[in-house]
Image (tube, rainbow over the protein chains, first blue to last red):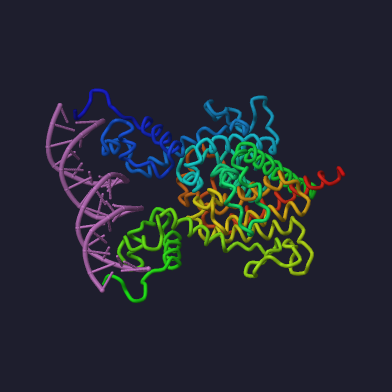
Length: 233
Length: 233
DNA sequence: ACCTGAACACCGTTCAAGT
DNA sequence: ACCTGAACACCGTTCAAGT
């Protein structure tokens, strides 16, 4: 068989299969040949649909970022944007969501989307590049903060520090990074890690708790700064 | 030549060369064959000194973590530990550093060490594993927080959220993630990114400012929580 | 003990050939 | 337009052979 009547592959099918493979076995397990086998075609077939492996990774990354909810910034996901009144930063009710609440909801959705695919986070964390969903995300966050009254320079920094925190929390489980083997912590050098071998068993609650604590602490600290900023006028 | 009188290689020389290669050309550029060429030996020679490429990466990672200053927790770097008075958590002066100050100093040193080698951060962020320097770091932070009065569960979460923030900030430059090409932001979808092409030019100050803002906000938020915790008693 | 070349099962990608 | 096998320059790792 050389050219089937109906194509065996599509870009979407390739991207979806690549993400599945990365989730299941890690970034290192994604090889074009392995992926082709998974899709029941020969290796070179992929190159009819994607130019390079890097371009494929870019598409996978943007599909993950596309899962992040941005509706709290007044730009609902599915709806066509560009409302005639030129007020893109309103929630459906008509009034903009207070920025700390919008930031909290967004951060949770952002983390959930990334933590569902931790193995791709190192690629994603390199920045938006030219990926449309990543640029849309950056635009929505920055725009909302500026319209809420943050100076542009501060809004940029808040976008950055939120990404630091979210990508860091989605990159790997803190708890699971500690071997469950108690003997590891026997050494006299680690006098306080006597219980560390039990961390991996509480993976979910430890990481979730750390994320929520950090998120609320960050927001409290930012609100403090915002108040100092506005009480000056 | 088969076996030279004085060995051509050593584990230290291999680790150092690997880190140089990773820094200069990225994690993907590190191949055992390429590394061997860099060291003027044949590929398989490396296997007399390291068992696998993964073990080599582990050693590289731990050498980077070894650069992090932990002296603010009362365990000075170079000095032999185990002071006879059994008070490991004191600064040279004798009194423990207040935890917010210790955390701040540590976070800055942690970030500096990692940001000097961003390409290795994805590996490092997987957790301490069995790496001695990484375990020592976790022990010092956790121990200091507990002795400062934080409940153990909270101390664990603070260690986790600090690592989230620091690894996230060291993984990649926020500013450099935005293409310097102004045309990228022309699309109607990005109404607020008109100046984003200028970000890459301010790489240093944007990322540094975001890290400092986030760090101080986090610490403020944590102090708030600590006060709530202690005023209850 | 420590280095070498040969060999194995992999990679990403190109290209001519098929329909 | 879309798939194939063959081919190229790479990988990590093993192993027998050398000193």
